[in-house]
Length: 311
Image (cartoon, rainbow, N blue to C red; front, top):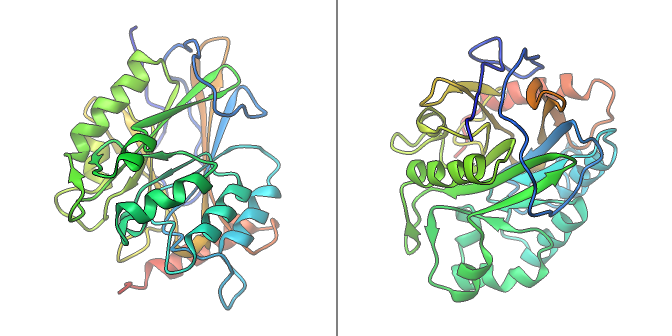
């Protein structure tokens, strides 16, 4: 199948806001696996979090935490896919965190360093409580239960559209580690070319400040990924960024603030009669605030977060 991807963004980079696109992308292929079906067959909306750090309750400003995040998602007019870039566990009870993620409606989550803090067996013990799959394409696990349960990718059907999701992480002592750039390209090519996915999402737990493996380099060395959902590093990014991949096509990179305070909302739309992507929108939302001017407040909070270097 020949994949024709044209430019879908008018600018090389975008900061916290909305972008509209002209024409592009590949023909819609058949579907052979369904995890969930959304409301709108022409648009895929992706809500995403990262570095939840096990936060269930909100902070002193009554912002963030999975409880408020869950309410924020329920108030959305558009149904969508809910994903996490990893490091969703913290020092609190993992079962309670997973239970809240189930209630929030997560469709997939990546594995971060926080999930492996207490070893593979501790994460494997939480698997029976998860209603969502864990995805990772560059780790090799010793624990048989974890190795069997963690998928290199999942494919979700949204009307006539197919969304492929994979995940990857940084090098962690004691965990089998493969080059994330090579692992992503292999998995993304399978999803886009072999499986005919219209949208490929990578959930990344790479450290933004790492000079060897980071999301900017990941995007630039990729070939079939449309969206990279990342986590914050020592500083929080102010907005979504666009990078050119190895084929000079655009890849959106979005990361959000820690503890569930900020949620990303990214939408891709298609002209189903032509089989082409024709619209892209991105906003940030604040968990704990009413919807009125929520995106504007998210931008202000992200700006404040970006000025603080985290320990």
